[in-house]
Length: 139
Image 1: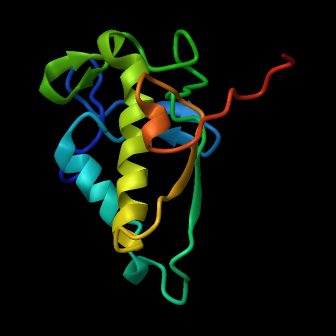
Image 2 (image 1 turned 180 degrees about the horizontal axis):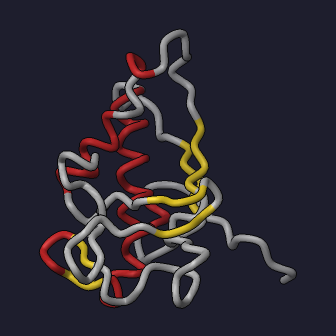
């Protein structure tokens, strides 16, 4: 992904690097249809030798969540596909991540079954690609 330039960029045009559960992390630019397609292909049966067609995914922290970010997310001036700033697409980012994962599971199953992709992020239309949850809360 690094060599292909598939990560969200910081304001200076470098791969954005944030901190989350796995440590230092870069974030796929899911607004780019080419990257969503690349991501979807990662779920093919050939990528998981010996697995079954049934695969259930939980896209966690895909709001995106960044522990060392200024507001627990990417900086507002991080750059996405088309030089769009994160401030303008924050809510849509998780939707496109959700969509890319669901597309991958649809391809994996030959389009015969609706995939189960649980997402923590939500945007208008997200319900079309899978269920969402409200995160950790006390409501």
